[in-house]
Image (tube, rainbow, N blue to C red):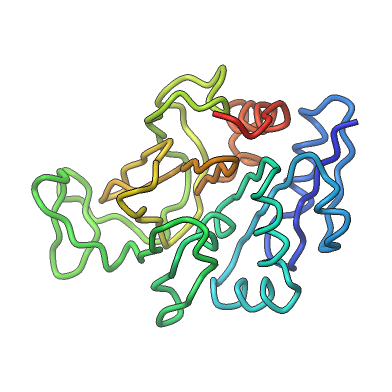
Length: 228
């Protein structure tokens, strides 16, 4: 039996994620939980999140989820999703600046503050977020977008490069130079759509809402041993 824990700290589409895992998994037992023993006893752990980072980090620390995640990444495969991914960074610009978990080097930036140059193929106009044709882009970034795979990570198995995934976010991850992106997406500025670090894989998009490609990624996660 493959035991999967979806970390519950009150933020995120927890049951949607759980149902998707149950749908793609074989011989799996999924728990939506904040209980440390249940999470640490799981074979695979999912760290989701939706909402303002200040509220998320407040609950993560209040419930001791920060210590649990630190223990998980010692020896278990961890999939972080959306704000779960952002929470792994050093800090976020959201809510006038919030300290995050610092488990992956990088910061979370607001699309509306993004400054572009010609090397990035886009431009800025009076603080607006623009595409390559100078068209104004809305914030939040919401809907389907292409993810360019930048490595051969096991979680990309049987997923075509440049597949579309579903995004809903106003903030994006800017990785530190020593970290490794697994997928890049363009929305006025190139940003990290997926990253890997040891037995951590994190995505900005929502795999549970991304139809075939997202379900395949969840299926791959259930079969992943945390090694690259």
